[in-house]
Image (cartoon, rainbow, N blue to C red; front, top):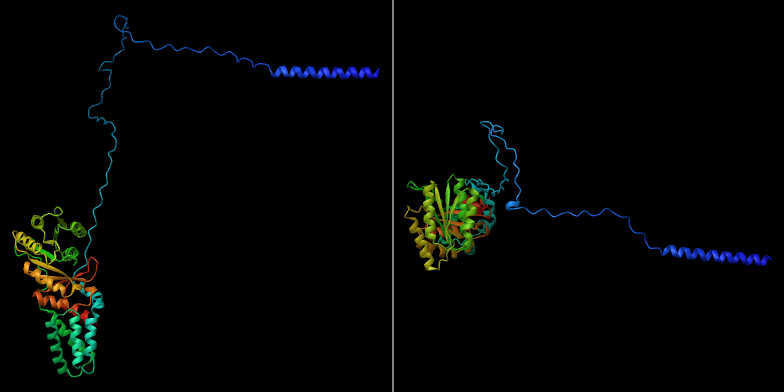
Length: 408
């Protein structure tokens, strides 16, 4: 009996389990319910087309204001214009600051150390030889060789040695101080202290003085012209520069840069243009401005080019239509030595050289070129270059030069 009851219970349990499984499966397969109904979409009617002709609507009249009802601005009241966009401000480049050149008075004395470093071979070499106890023929030959090596030149060397031999024989005993004084006096005589070394920057006529700068390419001619402008400005002169070197593209730019640094205007022409025309215009502008000096930088030309040298003479003749040229400065490179004398001789045949500017004198031991070139041309050295600085061009002073040669 108990077994039957147990079997019935089991059967009921099994039937119940199967019924639950079937019901769960049916629930899973039930379709999702439909979404709740929403409001019907509103259909927007297209805008009505404008009617024309008989179908056109009569426009409705709007109320209008009389002139009394309109507020007018009171007399004297300014009406602000509509705001405009601010114009773009273009900043112009600032003008270069004008420099104040170093005074020329005593400039060579301040640069003396540069000169003495390069010229010790000449001055101290001579003092050492003259200080020997016995001055035999071999010693005098060494003295002569020292002078020739320094490019003093053959004739000036022979004159100096002859005078030294005579004075040493008369002097007898030779103390270092006596020898130094003797050598200083003889070298000063050789350099020529009585020559007129002033730059003629005042024209006898009522117009600017005209200075031409000539020379071979590579001697530092354009740079020397720019430095000379600084020398003149430092001495209180107003300057107009003429860039007549039209064959070298950078020459006019370089000269203009030098001029802007001291407030001097540069007259220039087209690249490859007529140099004589530029020089003529420069003098014309100088007269119009009332300048003190017109400084003309000419093209550097090889002394072997006959046609170019003739053109240099043409530049001078064209400039002289305004008036005489007061100075023609020949720029020579001191390191070229005796070759500089050949250049100087040819330039002197084309234009009348009135003065010499020796550049790079601090870079050579051949300071005797000062004596040689003066003897060759019969004109004085007026300026010497002793470095690359803007104020390293100095008026030549014979006493300071000789003191630098022989040292303290």
